[in-house]
Image 1 (spheres, rainbow, N blue to C red):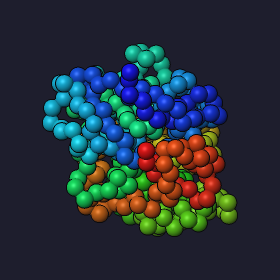
Image 2 (image 1 turned 180 degrees about the vertical axis):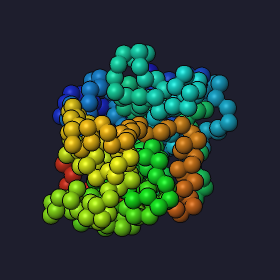
Image 3 (image 1 turned 135 degrees about the vertical axis):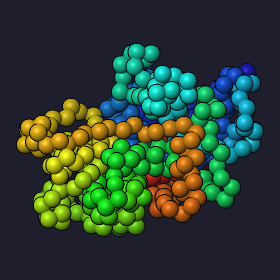
Length: 358
């Protein structure tokens, strides 16, 4: 009889429960990791609310930290008992997308029919990380050993939040001396602020209304924090920049209002780097778009994954150049996953990210 494990299972919109599933069988290229810490992402809340469709019965979660329990017969370069992370996006390393350098889109397209997913599999097309065990496909492309001395919580943001936030700065091609605006200082926006500082921005303007998040934003690198409940953020950013506008605007919330505001604060030739997961159609106002004559760019980015990306992120944490410790505000056991979802989905008690330990 197959060994059983506990897992957070999506049943239907509005209902994710703690249930039991068989521990996965390990194929030749796979690895089974025992989860020691994971978390809940804003995208998981989109799934809970029915705004992003997944199959009933799927284990949710895509931010794993754990220990290798069992290796597939063809997997080399790792040992059982090794502490590892895997990115939220799990490229195969051999697909057309991977070999073309677009690892985050490995698995997208006709192979699954059209779905806005890129290479995101954990908690989307295969069982995810909010469980006692996780099966990692293409293990040699995705498992990244955790450096000695780093705790689970220090690397917990690397699989998704840190990678996504940094990619907003990277895709925006921030240059030394740039002025950057980051709309919303949730976990991804805070990491985008940190990424903008690392990329060389000389002035970073964050848009956020919650005092606790504003304070963390300044620690992450923001020079100004605009409270959108007290003043129009577009007017405020144009005032701060002397009417010039920003070189790069990073949208990290996923709403029409923030997308449009990010477009309106760009200087001519500026770049809007979009990270938000949108649940409705977007419209682009003619004036904000400069009637298509403003030389602006709109770029989107899906969280880069793969073991080399994870290695680089953990090296950045290990060096002390970024500290995501303040992002973990609450702790739960896996038995309390439904309570954790309720807290996180309703953004109560100042929650940013939760650490969940099986």
